[in-house]
Amino acid sequence: MNRIDRIFADLRRHGGKALMPYITAGDPDLAATAALLTDMDAAGASVCELGIPFSDPIADGPVIQASMTHALDKGVRVGAVLDMVATLRPKLNMGLVAMVSYSIVHRMGAKRFVDDAKAAGFDGFIFPDLPIEEAQDVADYVRRQEMILSFLIAPTTPIERARRIAQASSGFVYVLARSGITGERDSLPDDLPPRIAALRDVTDLPMAVGFGVSKAEHVRQVVSVADAAIVGSAIMRRVAEHRDGDVVQPVGAFVRELLAGLAPAPTR
Image 1 (spheres, rainbow, N blue to C red):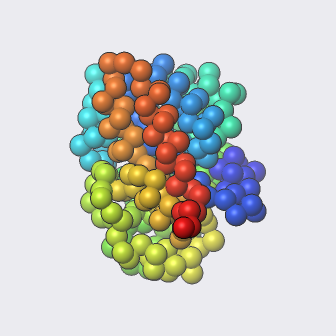
Image 2: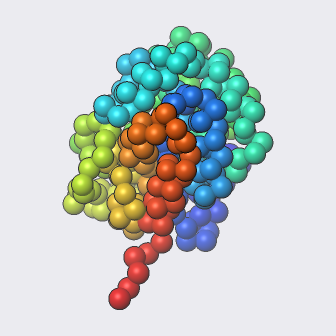
Image 3: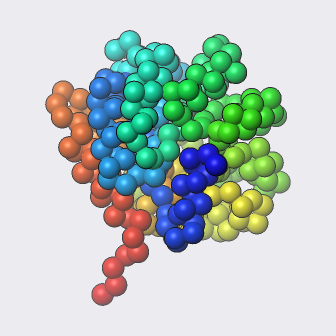
C-alpha cells in the first residue's frame, strides 16, 4: 500500500485527522528545507507538500510566489531537490507529495520525472495546472508505480465535474476552501461543510482542504468536516521572516500550534 493511503487508512481507523504542511523546497536553502521536514515529521505532521520551485506558479499568492523566486535565485533545481529528498527519506515517517507544475514534468518527460521522484522517496504528486482531460496517461503511469496523484476541486466546480476529478485522483482529493489564489485569511467560508458533504456523496477518498487555512482554529474547523488541513502561506510567511536566521524554531513552533487544532476545542 502506498504510504499516503496507509497514513489515511490508519487515521480513519483510529478516528484521527491530518495536518498537511506545505513548504517550498530551497527556501531559504535546501539544508533548511531538510531541517524543516525533519522537525515537522517529529512534531507529528502526516503528509508534507513539497513545492518544486517554478518561475510561474499556478494559483499561488504573493507569499509562495516570492518563496519560489527566492529558491530559484539561489539556484535550486529539480535534481537538487530530488537528491535532498533521497538523503532524507529513510529518516522520515510522514508522506511526501511533490507540488509541481506539469510544465516541469512535461519538459523532463513524465515517465522519467515520476520514476526519479519515486526513486528519491516521494509518495505522490499534485500537478495543479494539469486538466483531468489531459491527465489519463500520466495518472495511469503514476498508479502503476504505486504512487498517488491528487487533483484540485474548486468551490465553483459543478458536482458532476467534481465526481470526474475525484475519479481521476488517488490518495486524497485536494479541496479548495475558496476560489482565487493561496494566502492567509481571517476566516473560512461558511459553505465549506455542505460542499464537503456533497463531495462525500461522489467519492470515498479522503478530503484535504487548503487555500486560506492559516491558524489552529481554521485547522479545527476544517477537520471537523474533512480529513486533513493543508497550510502553506502562513508557514512560508514565517520562513520569509526568518530567512537570515534560524527558521526551524519559529516555523516548528507554529506547526505545533497548528497540530493542536487537530484536537477538539476544549469545553468549559
